[in-house]
Image (cartoon, rainbow, N blue to C red):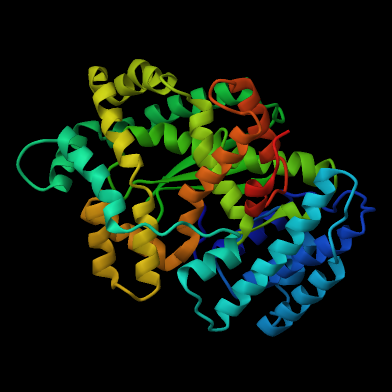
Length: 440
């Protein structure tokens, strides 16, 4: 997940002022370039009102300095965004696909910006209204009965006394990575994720990231992209970290997830084409569904089928001091747990719509998402901070998977899957475009 804390915007602006991004964008000739520049400045201006809005910025330092020289009012930001949408007009009917995608992307990002302004001005949409406005997608509604069959299947795998969550927590206890082994395990996972990604995706020779272990966060992991092909990845150690999180976080935050996504946008769109709009990341926008969806689907792309179990058994379980003979049993259980991911959406939807309170939301997560009480409480804090953002992980992954497979990138065609995946990472495609795009 990506996140911003109270001082994040100041840190981002400090990074930009320090020269992480180019001092000036490449020469621009596209009529959309002027709109793109004004879009970037609007995002930075809105970030002065919303500490969580600007997730990353590596564009011209003077633009960030301008944003810090007095706040524009929310109404002024909204009016400017409306003018930019009107100036953009209709998308071009012919020409290069990327040019059409750029136009659609800028208009939809501006529309999402206006929706965020309305929320900051006091408008409280429903969960689904908000996700459609900000992320260009709406997650399906699932009743309790939808999850019960999966819970029954899990119960058969974990027989014995106690509640199902108690049995699940007891089972998982043997698969916690000891704090003293975290760095070794994560380093091994990152190295393998990078090796597998570089076999299929060409990246700049100087790309890299660093890893920090932090506490007191509402998220489990975070990529702070800093420009110049650099990322800072933070891993939250507030709660026990289970063995599957090593590959999950290494792929999601690093290779081929957020780090690769941002590197390719900077290289292919910002540097090669001069499209300055990708130098700023508006967190509450359609871009986040693409970012989170590709980061989650990237795990499956990098470790298809039995390849993940083999690597876990041979490398990560021994590095963590966990019995490798139990890898198959563990991932059999985790495979069932994965099918409960939409339970988190339901808890967030009901909680944010005012249908249940925080305690009831946490209890829902414990019962239907198999989260321990401390993890469920942490997740409700995430709901407070990021609201309908939760759909970007599971719905985003599903939409990306459907899109890639519709274009021939199936498990039976791994090379094609990597090709289509990398092409998506380096393009400004919208979530609604994932449903509409035809096969190649």
